[in-house]
Length: 208
Image (tube, rainbow, N blue to C red):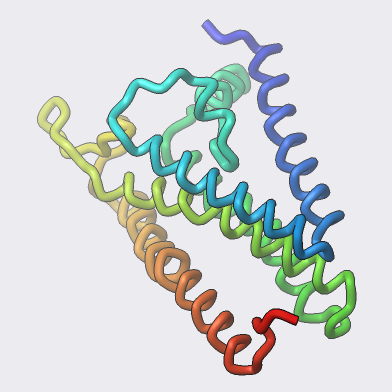
């Protein structure tokens, strides 16, 4: 049985926490020392995210303490109350497109903003931080699409037996998964490496 008030409150707190974190990072984006501390924190979140892939029965609140861990169970409660049938596919696409709705405007702003302006620096640092937080969760959920098993004589997704591992909708998710692995899993680290290498060649990483 779903507690609708608790579900709505939890979802609201989740959204609010992401917004507060984003605003805080934006406010300190010019300070190199504080941004270094934030990046160390993001590394901690990355490691914490990886621990959720271990087959351990973590308490539910542990997952809610990590960035981009959508409170899925409560989303299911709200969806059921509204007459919507929630499935893993909703979660899968939410992990991809909801963050992208934030990343794309930020990226466009950084491209259009005046070069070396404080606003450009803040937006760029915020985008980098959010991408770093998004990296492990989105790759984790992309990998879930690869795991199918037999259930009542059908080939179904292990994470959600209501989803058959056949048909156009499933292969569309697999296509998304492949793109994520290429663009995010490989592309983001490669872009970061090349950017740092370019800065090193230009001497912009030298201590002053």
